[in-house]
Length: 216
Image (cartoon, rainbow, N blue to C red; front, side, top):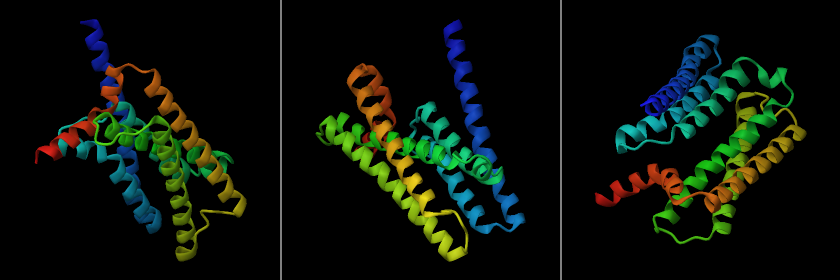
């Protein structure tokens, strides 16, 4: 009984924390509109939508993304939008940009790994672990590159200075490289050393979505 109550309390705490982060990001939108920063207000809107995707999946497909992933996604976006942009951590802490790129690409790599391994786990595709690693790493690095392209476009169109300098851009890409590489390696090691029950839990959300789509 104590163990069940402990698990319930732990889940409630992490759920509360995740929604606190989500609502903090959503609360930025009217503040930024009043401030006149419409570009960042739109970015905060997109970030808010991303943070509530797990809840949308839960209501639409009746599946639950592991609370760890929900919390990590919300935390990552919170660190970028609320801390980095609103509290000016990017200006106050010189390595904040590198930290966010490293962590952000790592999160993208984990999500990509979850997707491709689920297809392998459900036998929709037969893939080797080296290929899964390569796909995850390249996908994460590609998202990091697209992010830099978007920053360049914002600077050119809206006269912002998100890229700062060529050196800053290169360190961003290096951080993306390291974050994607580390997360991909961790994913492969997890699959090799984890039990079948753990891998089943890891792939359960997407397996449920695939199953429901196949039933239609």
